[in-house]
Structures are given as structure tokens and as C-alpha cells.
Length: 360
Ligand SMILES: Nc1ncnc2c1ncn2[C@@H]1O[C@H](COP(=O)(O)OP(=O)(O)OP(=O)(O)O)[C@@H](O)[C@H]1O
Ligand SMILES: [Mg+2]
Image (cartoon, rainbow, N blue to C red; front, side, top):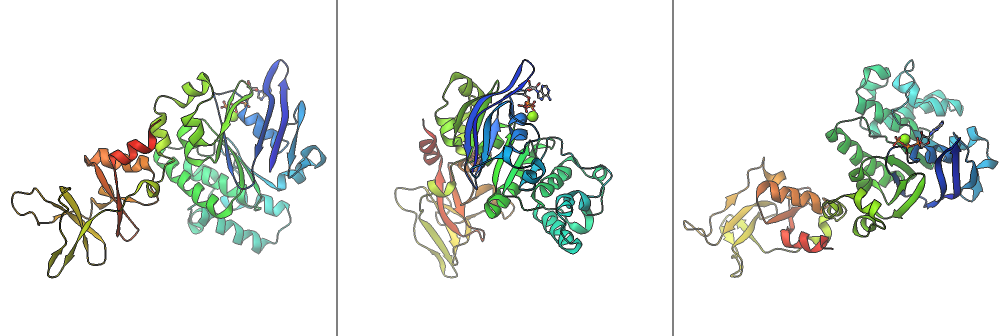
């Protein structure tokens, strides 16, 4: 656990951080967010003692950080900085391996670690290990930065806008990768961002800062549902409901649905009298399409879903309500089938279910 206790940082007349108190729980992702200049980077840098507080204290696992030498402290804290900060004259492999080599790890162990980490962040070692930072795209450099922060397997990770410099699509992919890595490694993470969607997506807890002060520290759900001040309300914006949906898993909204089975002998089952449509599956439960009970031609003819459209017309159980909604709006459908990885029908979610779940 990281504990900040009335921490203040002054630069001359500037109060960069003002009596900030907060706790970061082990294994959780805490996201710092707020306008430019509100003190986010300064807060991060005080945690690993790149900057020392003017007053107040910071405890890590109950130990006052002032009692550890900064370089010793930093071995237990990975740091991915704003604008990546890779060493230009070192290869990707050397950049990632720098902390382990300072720690005196054996060469073979370092090489293995670097290659494992490259794999973890989705970069093929064979292609990337020998490249120099100038030969990487912005997104690749950021992934190398994240790999470097993880290199010595530190329990704590500080990340300053780690996915800042990339296009929205790459950013989304990096965020997904980060969440997958975090589910496995369960680091204690303090991450800075400007992007509220990113905060809502990644955080267990969000700290909203303004002028060096903490104005709200809450779960993303609570932050969006109950902003504590007009500042936070304005900050989280008018589309709070939409953002909240990205925290609601389809799994929790899904209802079971009546479906018909397509057997060699024909369709098994009927569309219930209260319904107009019903989903149709193969014998093994894989979704095929639907039947329309009002169909003029043949009430039992199956409208098959084009395999290429299958992904747009269905959602996975692990998707968010926001994804489900965007599929529904994109396809003009009022209910969407929920499927597993083999496309087996698990249930469905309707527009009404989503509305209900996100109502204030
Ligand atoms: N080394 C320094 N010397 C003087 N002032 C500084 C120094 N570092 C930061 N500041 C000031 O402290 C305040 C907080 O800076 P900080 O870098 O923590 O902001 P930030 O929230 O990370 O902003 P951004 O979102 O733009 O990265 C700013 O007003 C900044 O000008
Ligand atoms: Mg900053």
C-alpha cells in the first residue's frame, strides 16, 4: 500500500501539490486525472523520490520513503514516463534490460526477461530487440517504455501518460493489453492520464486533482454517478451515462433467451406467441440467425447472419454495455445476442436492459 499523508510540494510561489492525502491499495490501479499543471506528474515523482515533498510524508508498506535511499527505493518501483524517455543510443533490448543489469542479473536471465516482456506487450523479440528507439513508432516506443518499467518485476508501477502519444485505435489496444497484463501481474499502479475514458476504463479508483488538491477520490462508477462538486461534474462531462456504460459488463445485463435449433430434420421449437423474433442456433448451440414470426413468405425461414457481420451483430459476455449499445446503434437492432468465443448463444441484451442499468 502507498500512503500519501498531507503531502505538499512548493516550487517558489507555486503550490504544485497542496496537502494531498490518499491511499493506494495493493494490487489496484489508481488513476490521477485533472487539468494540465494540477500536480499529477509531481505527485508521481514524489512517490519514487525523483522529487522530495516540501512537507508531509509518503509511506510504502508502512515505511517512510525518506528512510530508503532513492536508488534503492526505485528498484521496487517501475516508472514509465511521459514521452517515453528511452535512451536513444541503446537498443530496445538494452533499454528494457537496464534495471536488471544495474541489479547485476546474469546476462542470460536478462535476455530471457527482455524477450518475455516484449512478448507480453505484443512486440516480436526477433523483430524489435535490436532496433533503436528512433526506428519505432510512437505506440511501439510506449510499449517498450511499459516493458522497461516492468523489467525488474517491481511491485509498484508509476506510469505518466503511458499511452499519450498514440492514435485512438492503438491506444485502445494498449489499454486492453495493459488490463490483461494487470489482471495477471496485479501490480500496485499509479497512472496519470488526461483522458477520462482511459481513466474510467483502467482505474479501480480515480483521483481527480485541481490546483494541487485532491477533489474527489472514488471508484469510476461513483465518480460518474455522484460527482462531488460542480468542478468534477463539468470535468466528467455531459456524457456521464455513456461513460458509465463502459464499466457495466454485458454479463450482468444478459437475460436468457428462447431460441430455435436447426436440426437436419428442420427447425426445432417455435417463436413464443409474445415475441416476433427468435434466434436460431445450430444443434451445438452456435448462433446461425433468426426467424421472424410475422414473415409473409415463410414464418420458419431462417435469416442467416453473414459470417462477416457476425462480430457486429453479437457481443461477447466480457464486453461492456457501451460496446453492446454501439453495436445496436450501428446495426439498428434493439436486442443483441450474447455469445461465447465459439459463437454459442448465451443470452441477449436489449436496449431496455441497458437503459435500466444506467438510469440515474
Ligand atoms: N521543476 C519545477 N520547477 C518549477 N515549477 C514546477 C516544476 N515542476 C512542476 N512545476 C509546476 O508545478 C505545477 C504542477 O506541475 P506538474 O508537472 O505536476 O503538472 P501535471 O498535472 O503533471 O501537468 P500536465 O498534465 O501538463 O503534465 C505546474 O504549475 C508546474 O509549472
Ligand atoms: Mg504531467
